[in-house]
Image (spheres, rainbow, N blue to C red):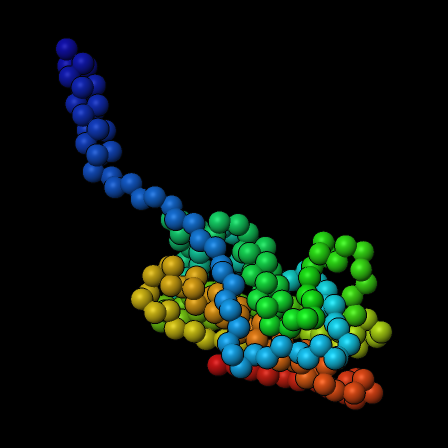
Length: 217
């Protein structure tokens, strides 16, 4: 009888613990493309069109995970188990970046390898993401290095840049953080598109001496 009472007591104890445990549903997020500002003008059609291959974008290993990341300090990261990316962040970033870029460089075209469909590009764009996270001050930080190469001289970068963006998260929510990260990617596309326009308006003989290093805050 004592054994039965203990089993019954244990059963009700487990039920009580489970009932007191709150269930939190996992939320999934996607980045989104953003329309270009009026200041980003289309390249005039009388220039030779550029077909830009966006090479595989390099991402740091710490971003290769589904959980959203909070950077507590320079040495410590916190993962959010209940707030996750709906697809690998590298794939999401690449898709949104190319979409943003194409709305800003029309009639020029940017695409990945699959989008070329056998057509040879005139230029190649190399992008490396060095950092993309949210800090405890509720700021989105995006730092990238990127270079644009001419297919005629693949060993020489026409332009080289390092760009950093710092955007405040409005209401400190995960959804607002994703919105701020989307804005940062759009700002990167703005900078690349501006460089493309400069290149199109610069005589080819002068292009091989165009090198840039820029930092955006």
